[in-house]
Image 1: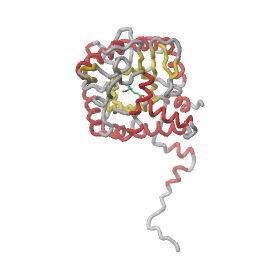
Image 2: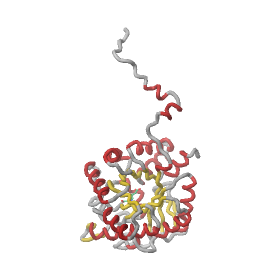
Image 3: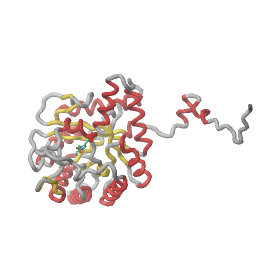
Image 4: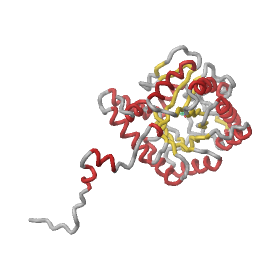
Length: 330
Ligand code: PBG
């Protein structure tokens, strides 16, 4: 029996017939300009150290950090996010804002040789405190207002050393405003602030904490990082950071939070960054190493998803691999 259609057949496959047609109608793109590569710098080591839980990612001594910059720059990456691992830690995270701290030295070294790269510096205390929390601990919990001036001090020292962007990630209230005021007071008004605005208390930071030695000694971060069940609160955190003077806002992690990235990109007229974090990196790497996923396809598909959701900047440990593929180098 012949079926009578009351509507025409919509031949959507016409748009997919050849690779040239598919690439002409592609709605989402990825270029090296979208990518920011995290780099770990560790004080007191002589050689580059592999990070066990993050295959392909390393900790660099200050005097070898330019090897990483040179290599990645060759593949087209122009922007980097620096994390420091100090030799000594104390309750006040002194090394985070010391004049001679590991990040200050790394920034100076990089900028001297590569003045044109965009350098962002993570501003937090957890890598620098003996207890591993992101601020000053008082009566068993992290004290917001005691922590703020120390974050500001760290941000000013990084900006003074030549950082183009400071990225407060401690999730203290008013961290962006405090840093913006401190930068202005120090005649550093051109330094950008990229707020870790919607930063969730996530299990996906696990491998990073091994990389940076920043696992909290007691308790967890749920008293300052966000509850992952709360999208509305995420919008409020982002709005607050913009109001306090953030130039770029970030959603972190990325893959389990594509809805947050999407909402933020529809709602706010500032550049949105998304951080494809350590655990998201490692789970994909592990599956690929076992032969359960095609590594290249999985990396491209997930990074495209982050771009499709609305992130302009993708902070990714895959940056170097992606940049090579974009540039046509295997
Ligand atoms: C510092 C900081 C963390 C990450 C970025 N900045 C760790 C944390 O909050 O515990 C995680 C990044 C990653 O997992 O790749 N607070």
